[in-house]
Length: 318
Image (cartoon, rainbow, N blue to C red; front, top):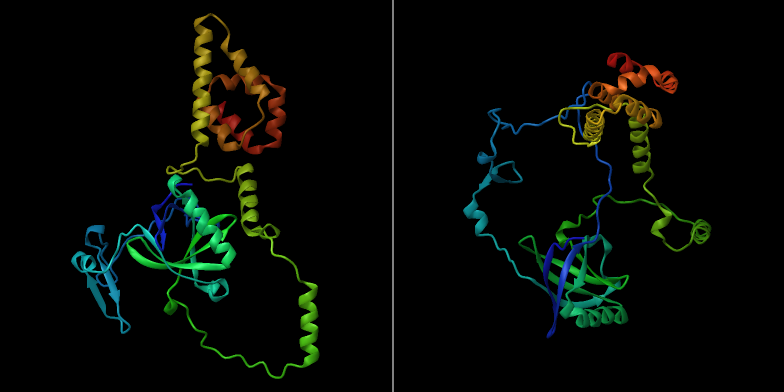
């Protein structure tokens, strides 16, 4: 992990120099919008909603929209006058019972690692939080603005969790009419709760959607259902080019010594399993020595029958 912030935790006269690391990362599946026929990525233009013209970055400013739809343009001078801070201090304001912090307020989590000189006071603060069963409410400057956060202990590491401001928590604007709840119904519901009671273990749950998407993508790749576009960043084609270049280098060296290069290429081709249709196609175009292998090796014909895409590639190479 890479530290994203350095500073110090201060409580009373004690100062603990620390490094800040992001404690979470998203594994959510994301898709790109592409052209169905050729896989090209869809690009979006920055177009003004009034004149319909494309706007360059140099003419884009920050605007604040009022409740009645009016737009207020803020200049760089206006933004420079806003209150900001670059303090490198995590100031402890008070220690509060853990039960008083609504989890709904929690936002982003960070790990705090002590510098070598702050190892002992770090351990002191960690132990104090554990024995008191309290969280430290702190103020910290992140990204040039002050945030409220808490310090708590998780797996012997102090975690800083930024919090949302109270006015950012929305109140429900609906009412719930439950009607009369009978004692027998409450008793039955309590029995159900007791039946399903247990301890929470995050390992009991897994993201089956992400795994299913990865399996579908894997199956399509193995079946050759991919679109190779000019902007592709995968290294598959580069590996094939490198392999072909090495084979040609070996062949040239053997020819210079008076040895037979095509036989070596044939042996190499027979020993290797059949590749995907797109990869085979590229290799067939770039390595003429494999043309002879397609004619001589009976195993190659069997592979061609199982993979029609490879058969077409072999014909084109011929």
